[in-house]
Image (cartoon, rainbow, N blue to C red; front, side, top):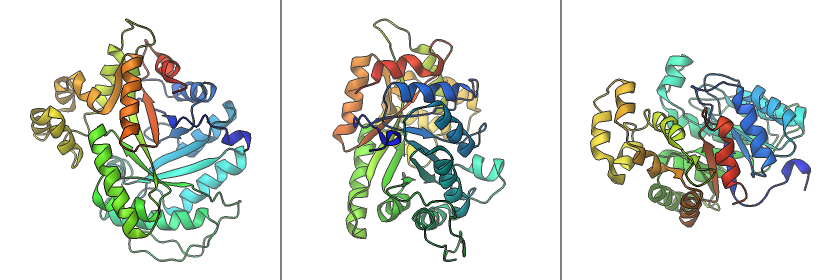
Length: 336
């Protein structure tokens, strides 16, 4: 095993939060910590600051061995050729193991920020997954596709290949895409109960596709006491804000309603101002989809996710003035 593929094997990884209320460069500090503390993998998304491939290259330069996953990338913003080129570029320039995650992202990101259409996003996800996988394996693009198509392109850099594709899924169509094309499914902001249900759906879809079930990763927001009595209120506040965009979203709304937040979901569906909705979200809503509180409780929650079939728990640590770069949370949970 190369040094860039060293892993603790614990199935515990880190995703950069890219918190909009924190300095952008703090993401580099979180990446260094994840590497130093022995976490299995580092996930790097893309929001309003760094280009993700530039960030991945920078992170590889300041870390020693941690494998990198870029994404989930919005498939109606980045086409398969640019995705494959970006992954191959980071791999060639850094020597680090690099894989990619694909998703449909949100209307705000796709249509408002980038001016692209999000119509037929499910079809685009399936077409991108197929084409990106083929390009990463070194094939030439075939020009087939009704929403996305690339013809005649082949990587000139070494093709990364090998278990390199993750699909972000929540709804049935995306689950089927993951079952058919992906090496791994990633779930974001889900309760333990919903994670188990979606893994069951993935298992059935994989059987129908004649493939083994892809591995499953779950992003879990986290704010953990570094020592007894430590205050995690700042982190919980930050995580509460992160729920605003999900409470009325299809699938997520039903999940939160089942978890006991039906009145909150009904309020979110009236489209209040984001500040008003944020103020209405109780800390218990964060606990339903995250790891918040004592180290012992956090470890119990991680075990619950693993108990329903999650192979890789991905911590998304809150980063605050009281816990810069999520250092206390990551230190407290490292190694298990």
